[in-house]
Length: 352
Image 1 (cartoon, rainbow, N blue to C red):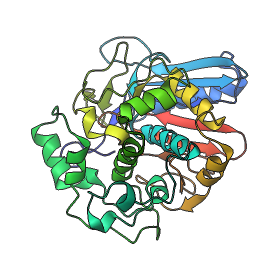
Image 2 (image 1 turned 90 degrees about the vertical axis):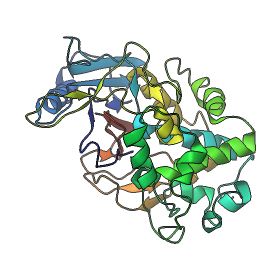
Image 3 (image 1 turned 90 degrees about the horizontal axis):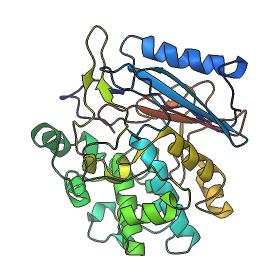
């Protein structure tokens, strides 16, 4: 997600997270020195985050590397057990929920908004669940709306209900015909979660707990949409600009304004555990995985290195990537990027 440009031009966090579930535990020797140098270089860069942490997991063993600080006021490095906002990586969680419901035949990828949420604007009715998940829906992105900007400016800590989020863009038509192209929209995952609530008759928070958090044993992961503070210990988020002192924006906005699009809190270790479970098919079956890997060419926002694509069924793990990570949109104090390395069965996720 992006905060309206009128408020903060660039948002960075005090952490960088790199999840590589294909490396062995060791001190930063040969395979790890490059990662450690990368973390140190990120922290030292003009406008870089104050701290960075990487978890590296292989064959049941985990290595943690870090640089800088989790809080600029204290000389403590970020830890893999520190809590943090995961921003748009939360979209992978909504993908896990929906694909689980598809596997159970509670929902079909071809089901439309008109079928499942008929009270939403008629112009949106032809959009399918598949198009929402792979960002080819054409729904307008609510984070670019005047309503979102006004709320962030006048009532940043105010609780936002998902219906209010959609009200900000409900008068707008589709940006393009559904399925005609790829364009990232945070609105997609709000609607996806509402569809999941409708077919299950559970709240989205309960669905996350039952279908994702508990099966993957994510004991430090939560969906605290009404809580602005983070569980302790936590990694602070900062606005960082060259030549200026970092500004702490950890509690600038209520996470309810991100909801299913980016409201989850986790730790580097828990997030690594989630991704391993995701890749191993913990949440859905082979048929859903095949659908998930039907990639749709398109540009990401903000742009990143390599060729980007949106994966059908909403695991935001674009491939192929030649030599870098694909950025996702930001929450205040958070920049989150991820990618899949075609050369090895590994997921890379960088949180800064």
